[in-house]
Image (cartoon, rainbow, N blue to C red; front, side, top):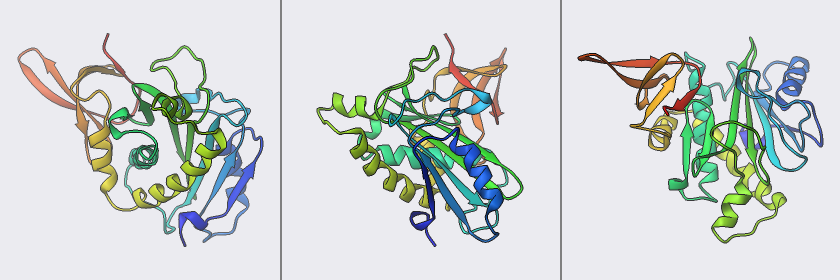
Length: 248
């Protein structure tokens, strides 16, 4: 069994691929391993912390991979935070076919940036049977929302490099690569070196929740590492959840 051969449920329009994956998963017999849900347009897409994911029809690759617990694609991580980073490593390398690796970075814990602008968001959820990995990659056009970092699209980035791709061609070239790289990074530990090398804002002063410090890397359990100076002492703080932003 491979991720490439898992059944795919495609919808021209759906409320949310994550919601639909939960509904499908509840009806499937045990032992199926996993499945894909992909949509041309979401009417109620969402990101982390309940944020709305906006798209126009055909403007993004929107997909959810459902991974059955205890199945062949269960990474077996003791902490769920690494699941988003495994997916981020897969997206990073998939987009690397179109863009230079130097143009791409991973904003902990679940965004991919292209030249400092958001090109992809990742949402992970879990229940007693399934891990759900939702991935949204802007293909043509990007949501115009008042948020940092600002959004961009794969089409916009490749056009700056002098290449012209249709949205359909980009999606058809990107999705097989995403499936292949997810298959690799759901198993093994190479995801860690990919994320470490591509980590955005390394050695910069950032704010993560109530903590402010210099972003120094990630731990093997997916935690963000901040160097914090408090008077004459220094310490490394591990951050397991929250949003990171540059200190202004």
